[in-house]
Image 1 (cartoon, rainbow, N blue to C red):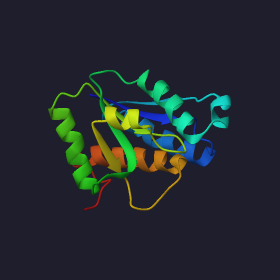
Image 2 (tube, rainbow, N blue to C red; image 1 turned 90 degrees about the horizontal axis):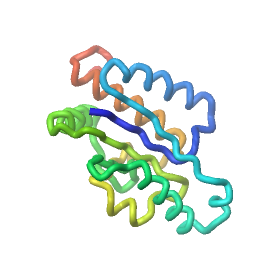
Image 3 (tube, helix red, strand yellow; image 1 turned 30 degrees about the horizontal axis):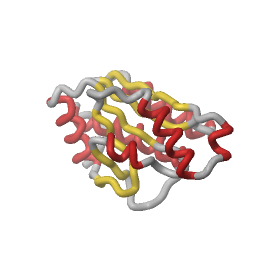
Image 4 (cartoon, rainbow, N blue to C red; image 1 turned 60 degrees about the vertical axis):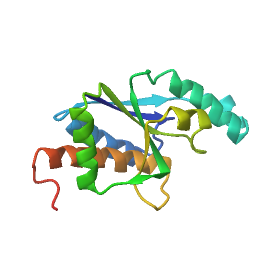
Length: 157
């Protein structure tokens, strides 16, 4: 199973990018993992929120294939413990999902088009974090999920 983290615009802060890279490298030992960044043209950022979300949706749907499992990282999504998240990853592997995409949207969230395409929604916390920070939190949790599945010492239950 290939796991893709799809994100809108590049990570701005170097300390976050460095942390993300550390966990992305570690994930290579467990799965095929890739981070894909969709760059939204600056002119789009001058438009209304609704127009921005629609433009982002077009760019997102150009990457997401019909057979992909699409999981939105969304504040209204289901919350999991780290153990439960690892079980979700195992379930996707056992279901022979070819490509599992986790999507972090732009500054205004997702368009209705993306919500309709999504297979599920995942929330990392009831708290609100920047989209930039969520990238690091998510990649760390994905790494943690694989160490749990392998019975490694990283996670202390």
